[in-house]
Amino acid sequence: MYSRKLSNGVEMPILGIGTFKVGDGPEAYDTVLEALSIGYRHIDTAQLYGNEESVGRAIKDSNIPREELFITTKLSATKLGYQEAIDELDISLQKLGLDYVDLYLIHWPSPSDALNQQTWKGMEVCYKNKKARAIGVSNFKIHHLESVLKIASIYPMANQVELHPGLYQLPLQNYLNQKNIALISYGPFMKGEVFDINGPFFKPLSEIASKYNATVAQIIISWGLARNIFMIPKSVTPKRIKENFMSLNITLDKTDIEAINALNRGRRVYTDPDNNSFVKQF
Image (cartoon, rainbow, N blue to C red):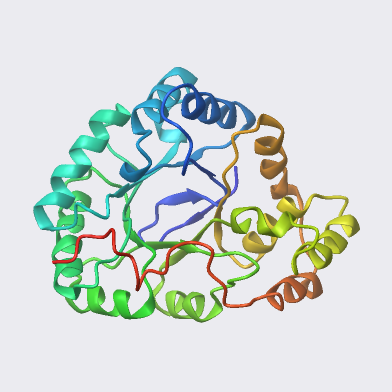
């Protein structure tokens, strides 16, 4: 499994499987077990997803040595705060049946800079206590990050954000590169919009896909990987889980990468981090 080093030297597989909206119970268990059997070693979950227990059971039943796996979870948007960041990780670890996670993220920023800063200080404690091998954020825009960096004694190692052909996030990526913060994509298929034959994305993507004898999904994953972005596609269908994994064998030409970049519309299909009413405010 291909991996790249985070700023602290921890190796993170460049391709993982997401579990957002993968139901707790048989669906999450079977999806994770299937992904691990195919060769995935990077599993992405979150408190908000409500499936950490099923993910943990699949990890255990896979019998894959713990050191070969990379497990990410995220602090719930409703549980921000210094002590909460510390206590909630213990709860997640109990559900996952693990002694540590490989990456622990603040799932969403609060509109309160002070609350984000307090939460980050709690994340640093989790890192120092070795309950998380790496720490970072998710859905943070540049202004959220700048607030955290003012008080950080340990910089975030990753930022996981909505990123796909309709929202290529190049300005954010350039900023993160300067700070040596890894960029992780979620929602690369735009909630299925890229597969809409009448939409603006399908025709150009399918033309590139035919050139490589690949699927549109594979082309999008390969495009992200070519940009040094860690990719977290989600599927519960064994055939697609495997197809997505095979994206690792595709190398896009520079012209095709630029053609996909040109599809950018600055368009979000998920919540705008500056307008997330479900997040703890103060």
